[in-house]
Image 1: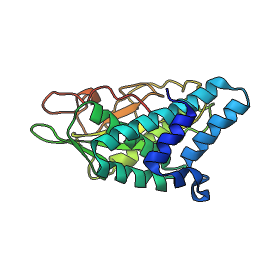
Image 2: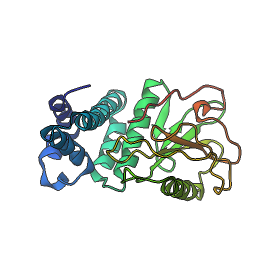
Image 3: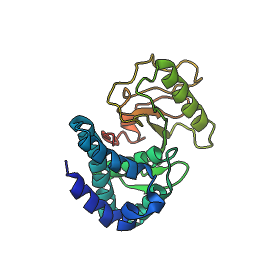
Length: 232
């Protein structure tokens, strides 16, 4: 894991020094994450300091992988990152992580919108849509988690691209506490279709779109896999 100083130098190189210095971005969630590293260090909380710095380190690593693969894709994701706020930052962060994971897996793909990624496969392409749920309290109950997950799934399920070739990735680790989230019974009974969880939160919540469920580890009609995608 890189030090915070190394991460700041990398972010200045990739995102521009203005992002780190300008008052315009003072309340940006990434700036808040960086400030949290300093705050935990000054308050002698090394575990939380290292957790926040690990998140920054992984973001830097993801951005460098995208930068080396496709600078136009990086430019698109940077714009999304710059304009993100507390409601959208973690969804953008998830997109960056997915893009980097696909690059590491050697997949041929495009950064698109609605859904977020188009992955070339035979005989037909497959797709990935990303979203996030906001769990701001470390005391999140199973009922809260259930409600937020079902709301996110229903919202995406109403889109025109909800079909058997599109996977939905949901990020749910949007708070700084390292306390585990509550467990739920799966599949969620009230969603009304065969959406199923493939990884327990808080690592990934991955659902398969459409009436026929398949594992998101085999999101390809040719039988190949996307590979394991570690969470940011």
